[in-house]
Image (cartoon, rainbow, N blue to C red; front, side):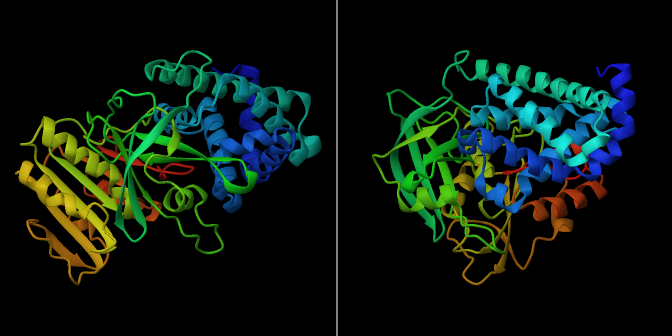
Length: 403
């Protein structure tokens, strides 16, 4: 808990820190990378370029301070869990937290100037270290559960055993441990980080990809969409590398499987809602249920540009044969040529209509797709009475959904 004296200072200064949050975190990243350029290898340069990373850090620190002072009723445990899983997938270590703390508190002083008295600096330092200690403890438990030795490397070499193009912009890679043996099991909804060395000595970049294959299989599968920059954003460095440079026989560095979301949602009715490449955890879930609970009542609702862009679509007829209670709803912006032999599906033209999603009593929901898409669907489900705790979702990149 925050000390009484610090709580009073943080409460008084929280509005000012909130108002200048992105300026503080922007200065923080500049300071830290100038002093420790090696840490650039841990951060998504696309999110740095767009400002998404600094906005996420600012909101997280401010939200945690509000939580400590009782200024918000937001449940903090799930947020900490999500951050810890992301950190573990990047190989963040306890020794890096003092570096972050030093530069973050220095940035507060540089942005707010004389307003940062010794008492203010000490109070916000206490906030930071309470947050850091909670994350360090969670991350230590995650590493232990994944079999990572204390202080040992997170990354392992995996060999690319197969490569299949699933659409013009999507490729699936199957992977086996380079040292032999079978792949560890995973829970549908978990993801792995892939670390690649960029051409021309530009350093390392890391991205997370949901495991899209069958849990319990001898090998893992990831399904990667090429990220094409829009609105001034850069093209995806890692997705472009995996599409253009990686072939069968190559070696990739992968983290263990992490992720705070179980896409199977218990054992009652299940609604899987996805858009674009967000279908990957849903496909792992369907493969898992085909093995473990084939009679379960499941609806897959997926939105995409058209049938050709719908990756992994060809796997649905076989899954539907093994899952007799699987209903499929598809929304394509261009629904021409949407029929697929062997697939029983309700196909609609245009954007997804959340009002048409079935909601049997007690249904669990899993969402994965662009932020705007998930906000639309989640808002509709909340208005229709689905409790927030029964709506699981995954955000790849900084942040969480509002509320």
